[in-house]
Length: 403
Image 1 (cartoon, helix red, strand yellow):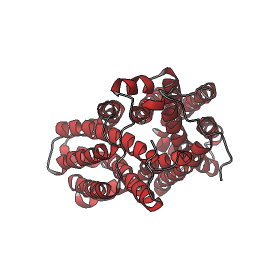
Image 2 (image 1 turned 60 degrees about the vertical axis):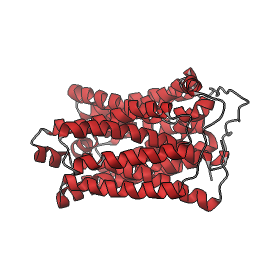
Image 3 (image 1 turned 90 degrees about the horizontal axis):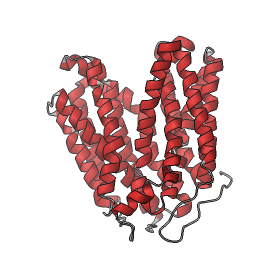
Image 4 (image 1 turned 135 degrees about the vertical axis):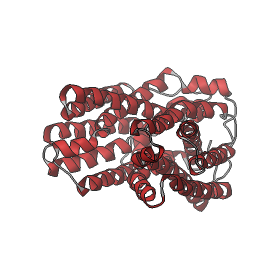
């Protein structure tokens, strides 16, 4: 449903939604950057604190779609505000002295409301822009997470060392509260689509054509994760990069991902099915180059940045394709790519770990390339899929030149 707004109102609202995903992404990275500090303070192994990351991912993967399903018939604005309010309140717990068990439970709930916010934010963003710009609107929302990858972890490390890990979450709470106030003032109402009930949402969002395209993303992000999880050992052990250059490479990866995420929106608008194939080819080519020439740092670094751009750039076309194929189930379908991406990340990390046990870091990169290559085939096979609609469908944008 297109809800016309002035151009200035659209820009401000999109800015608020971007900031929301940026803050949520930074909160995730904050934990990753302070795992050892938290473990030392709580007198537990780092692996125990690592459960915070797992809990957040499970919350997004399972809780996000569940909450989106339960709120599918509501105006998106109060859903957004409720998700932001819950996120703000839950992040107060570690600042107020919650123990590890309570914090893990809170991270599970935080992940669920993050998933709900992502779906509601994307639905809102695509409802206030003309249909031919929906991919770019999705990219604005999604790129908040990409940008957080560049700043969240180093920011978490700096805050943790300067003021302690508990006090660092006060920064998250203050930032989230500011986003909540901004969204309350600036984000317009987006009424639920008429005519499709909750069961209808479920039927359209989980149709075989939608699940097929979700599987493409699972394969692709499993490939990316199989390499990215072990990126630091690859840079150190294979490419021969060490010291502060590792941090520079990781920062560069985050920046390249942000650029790719924003650019992916234009490709989604030009033809999402084609962009998904091209993105999978780009990811596979980058992984193969890491296998073949990873020992040369002058080649390895640009290739890693290319991997970041391609993997982030494919996210908006994938999201666009899933929602388009879901038709009237787009509200629920908006939450599914985040869940599928988390599933792919888990599969990739496990596959890469087993490959390393068998043949070292190079084996993990080879396994990643194989997964990405299978994703190319799956993306090609799904190009001809068309949406199911309760009413007359709006045609998917034809591929066009990207300007």
